Image (cartoon, rainbow, N blue to C red; front, side, top):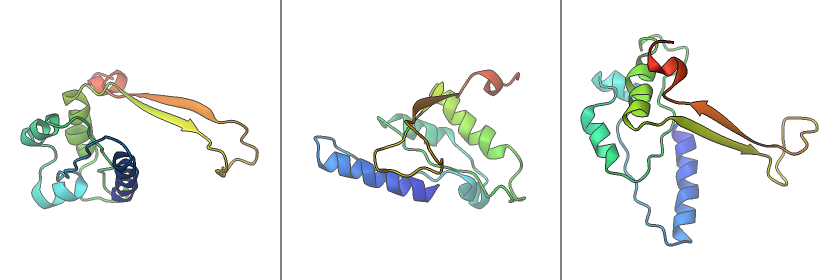
Length: 129
């Protein structure tokens, strides 16, 4: 959610300030809170605006799982899947490694170095799974 995006932005700003990278930031009204206020999930205008950027930093947009005021699956179908298909975001790569000096909840983790690959627009997401 917002707290994760805030930390990711701090990292990006630090990297940009110490290199020759021009970092511009623009927030868009998306997510469960925006839907509650407007009834909109992801408009074509927003998709068009997002296409004008080189990269998108996207955080969690859902509601509290205990929430009953948002129809089940609405945010997933009308925002997440719409974004994935609009940008052909076919995979989500999540590299995972244990950095030197970092602690782990595992009692003896050994070396951790792997990549989780999640499909984004195939399998159950194509609408016939």
